[in-house]
Amino acid sequence: MEIEKIKKITITENLANQRIDKVLSQETEYSRATIQRLLEEEKILVNHKKVKCSYKVLAGDEITIFEDEPKEVKLEAEDIPLDIVYEDNDILVVNKQKGLVVHPGNGNPNGTLVNAVMAHCKDSLSGIGGEIRPGIVHRIDKDTSGLLIIAKNDKAHINLSEQIKNHEVKKTYLALVRGHMKENKATIDMPIGRSDKDRTKMAVSRRGKNAITHITAMEKFENYTLVEAIIETGRTHQIRVHLAQIGYPIVGDFVYSNGKNPFGVQGQMLHSYQLEFTHPITNEKMNLMAPLPEYFENVLQQLR
Image (cartoon, rainbow, N blue to C red):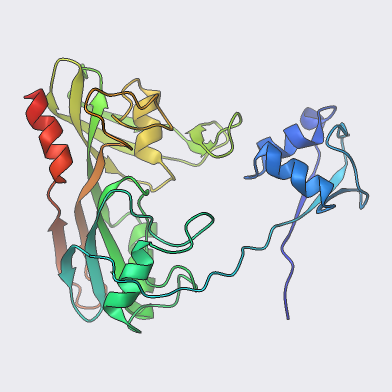
């Protein structure tokens, strides 16, 4: 039996008298263009009736959204090279290369880390992440490189998820940012949520979720700083948003800065270089590191 995903929103006084597409692009994860398409397809109803994009909502209006069902993705193992940092019967820790998406999704049906892991692990992966995320306990962005833990069985997956939820996994990153950082150490405590202006982006927002990043200036150059970032929380794009917010955007980040850099780097210079956690089965204390990618080291050599 197929269960339809439905979301209901009741319009409050502070949202009244605005266009429905504007309100819903602010109050949901959907872009304005997607909202307009869903309205046209009668997948968004106001008080059980179809309305146009120009409809201005009223206090008390009940809006029903019949959410888009994700398209089925047939996962296939693919022979993509993996840089394995650690492996045993329960977990696999890889050093993900820049440009590799973690799991299939819209626009990336294959050629992902999951496809590579499936080829390496065969049937030995936890199923908790669902059909398109087997073994995936946590994620890093496509253009962020570095350490990622894969669970080979459900017991390991549940334990690791609990450790992450309880902030017991220490994740340390290195980033090259624009600007000569005045501070040596700082803690950024700013909530992060969907941007009101662009729903594909994240932003510091009072309505967002708690997000904490501890930063240390590791090496200072004239116009750049090599920063160590330790995250207490794992919000989407957290380090990128936080550093841009305080005036030090990550070099090469086209989403949260203009991406301009004299080094020709495409995508943010952000690397997950250290993970500290407890092995989910043996309880051994794990401390794993991944060296900076060659391109990252080359840029630092130019600056030095």
